[in-house]
Amino acid sequence: MSDLLITHVDVLTADGIKKNHAIAIDNGYITSILSVEEASTLKSSAKEVLNGKGQLAAPGLINTHTHIAMGLFRNYADDLELMEWLETAIWPTEAKLNDNYVKYGTQLGIAEMLRSGTTTFSDMYFFMNTTAEVVKETGIRAVLSRGLAGVSPTADQALVENADLFRTWHGFDNDRIKVLLGPHAPYTCPDAYLEKVIALSHDLNAGIHMHLSETKGEVENVVKATGKTPIAHMHELGLFWNTTLAAHCVHVTDEDMDIMAEHNVAVAHNPQSNLKLASGIAPIPEMISKGITVGLGTDGSASNNNADMLEEVRLAATLHKARLYDPKAIPAQVAWNMGTVEGAKALGYHDLGILAEGYRADIVLYDVSGMHWMPRYNDLAALVYSANSADANTTIVAGKVLMKDRELLTIDEEKLRAEIKKAEQFFVS
Image 1 (cartoon, rainbow, N blue to C red):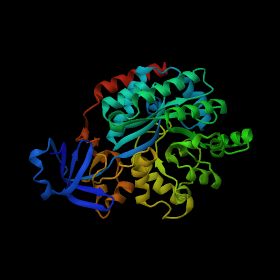
Image 2: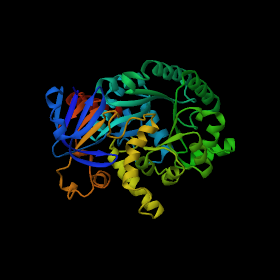
Image 3: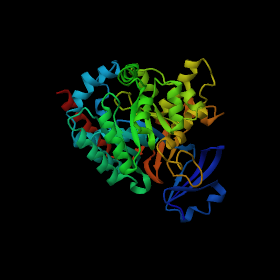
Image 4: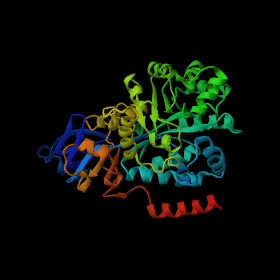
């Protein structure tokens, strides 16, 4: 017996496309990928059957770096460099946030992600217990970090909140929710505070999610203060003893990358955000060549325009070709892996991001009837270079259907729209 059986669907596997196949799912995992003839005997016993005709089944996209409730501030302030954007627009506005606004800002981001084929996100923000509750209710997969700023008057309380978040939610629903510690960045976390974060990470055996080497200014300031780059300085402090997810890493040296490779520091690459905020272009092909795990993120929704991971995959594939004047710099397969299985590894999942027996059933069914899919020579290349997020027709997380035929099943969109309009009026008043 299967919980869910998807029939008559083309399946993107690590070995290529399996045409007109079926996917059997039980208890949140893929139990088999088989021909429709083989699957015919399972139909009568399956709890739910989806007809995937005219669709391509692919692993759900994995967004390794977000501040999801910041979708409330989308287009609130644009065309600024990072520090001006933060100091003059975002931080003053964030001071008005409360649990209620974060609840609906989080729902907004999750609705976008489910609609655009993203099934997992890694978030660093405030009011994270509220975020966890929304994740629980909506069914998406998430890795959550309470943002920690040592320069804040609530710095010590934030550490307590991150520890409580870890103890309450880490491992929830068979690791559908995980928790990391979230020191924001070197410019908001003095060394004395980072030492507290590192001590807590040892106490809890918790990994760390942190912005590192995002801008030239950040790197220059840390070098001036310590004589070392941010990566080298964090290494000296002992930050990299456990799982570390480093967001951005735009301005890194060869020595930095050697440290990251040696200590399994994974990178959340945010190409669109880095371009929009004029932060620069990370040396991703060089990182990959050194064996560093690289996932993709949208860094938003605020600094990005949306939570569309297909755009990030496409940009990752094309941006580095242009930077290196090399059409093979990041091939389509590598870019797709960054958005799926490599992103999963960056978040500590080793049975996610591939459609295969024994892997977690986080699956998106893409409608391939659009003219932009024709002719269908190579569906993987089409996903990377031609598809758009509106092609996502059905989204499944942990074997549960969260969007079917483009209808969200766990979010009341009408109520959400009304709440976002209220928030808009509040933040501009």
